[in-house]
Length: 330
Image (cartoon, rainbow, N blue to C red; front, side):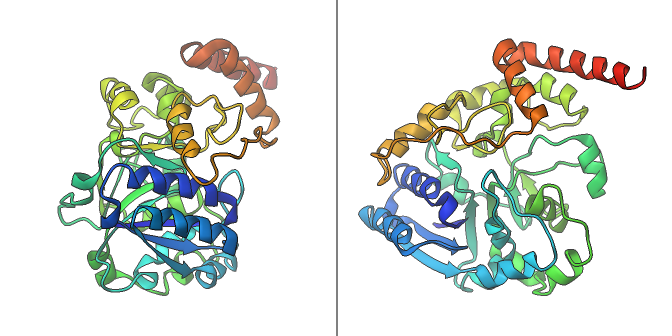
């Protein structure tokens, strides 16, 4: 099984924890980790290599900085709590990976496996180029991208690619015609994934990418806050079932919760990540507190969420927005 990560030093530890979780849920000797190196020190690379070798998995390293420079020159934004262009590298996979790799599972480094995934890796893509799970995104953002309200918008953290099918239509000059002269995409390369592969993405059950906003808030609350009645096709029962039966847990950014690699973590699924962290080469290092990163408005929302909880927060947040709107027009 070909597994791909893109990282620099800023997210190397999280990537190693993810690798360890995968090796614990399948035969590690069957895994080939393809590491898209966006700036990894030799010390960190040795840790990742030792981790892979400990389970008899293979680790193959690719320098993707020249590809990322193409993106930087267009002015497109970097991404994440520690901003980086690293994840843009996944859009160059047909050029980066050898032709012998015809299928690859791309994972963000903030994902851990919590169940076996062998069957998922062999999924029939039904003629599509890739498979992905839906994300929480506003109707306004869909319209900004030119997507219809009913169209799914996919989270790019777990993407299963048919590389052979992608190579058949891949244009190595895509940066020029897709990014040059265009305003930065608000969601960076995730927006581009959704536009580039429009109508070519097989929707996945949420258990294959159980992302953080589905843990933070109830489905009805998410639809109300994002003003998106067509937010996703997942049911409330499916979302609740993921709390116990997710295959991949995604610890992506959520302003309401603290991610698990900080000592003041508040993500409900943080204990799962911390279990793998404790077994990793980094596990003896104490976790730091979350650094200041939230805007003033996000800080207020987090305090409100901490006081009101996942069910009370949406009502109070809606009331607050309504009150602020009245004040602005008075």
